[in-house]
Amino acid sequence: MSGSRSAKDFFRPLAVGAPTPLTEIPARPSRAIHFFDPSNPKMAAKVPDMVGTVDVLLGNLEDAIKADNKVAARDGLVKIAQETDFGPTQLWTRVNALDSPWVLDDLTTLVPQIGDKLDVVMVPKVQGAEDIHYVDRLLAQLEARAGLQKPVLVHAILETARGVANVEEICGASPRMQGVSLGPADLAADRRMKTTRVGGGHPGYLVREDPPSENGVANIEASRATYQQDLWHYTIARMVDACAMHGIYPYYGPFGDIADVVACEDQFRNAYLLGCVGAWSLHPKQVTIANRVFSPSVADVAHARRVVAAMGDGTGAVMLDGKMEDDASLKQCLVMVELAEQLAAIDPELKKQYDEVEA
Ligand code: GLV
Ligand code: MG
Image (cartoon, rainbow, N blue to C red; front, side, top):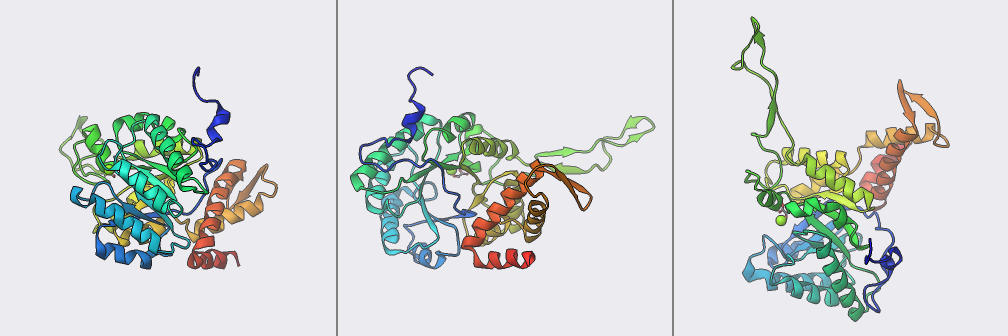
């Protein structure tokens, strides 16, 4: 494209003195991104205790924080970040939307004060690459001024129709792009979907089996099985492809029905099977679900290791338990084994389970 940046420029800092952009996004475990309200003293007090129990703690400044509490949430996050040793747990924040009156102060406060502790900034309601470019340059300027050594990464929420239409260019807009989350609530509103829930399914979105035929006449009144469909399948699949093509990570977002841990687990598992690496947690219960769902099962890891061992140099084909395994199934197994190793490195309980089947 004429006038666009050279590919070589992509990995040069956007401000003099800013850290060099990463050429690869580290694959750090992020099964659950646990949201907390930094303006709520009760929730803030629990943060240090959650370190080590959850892969990501996210100080939320955007939706769910009342306008009157925006400044308290921002200041609260600075204080929590300064006072807490996060150990293996990542610290993320969700800043306010780019068209809000708060986001500039969010970024100009957080990066200088806690930029060295902040792994990822989640940007809501991203519409296109231009939104990422704006944040990219601003972060570089702030990093340079603060003398930060490593770049703050950026995560986009996919929650507008235009954002979905532009998801590929959003994922590739900056070497800072760490990942993308589905935001089903805002996306439903923006698309004018006729739902009122925060994620999950809908009983009205279904397919029905054909009517039985009686004497050559279809009996449409007969009892016929129906199957609820996944409202989010298209968007998640598209997001997964866009992320994979740019070497970044896809996530399912919020599941609002906290009490329905069963449906939450189903939604998370669908996302996991389609390629997502994690989901948001709005309650500690959902951390437990996400940690379980987004960790490969012991049986899957054992099987994947068997295939890897049986495939030797990785070419050709072998039969295992009557099933054909070849280069392609080996690659799937390697995805599983690598993920298991990354998780085992930070989760001793999981390591024990994975090691036991190996022995
Ligand atoms: C999340 O932010 C959503 O809108 O679902
Ligand atoms: Mg939203």
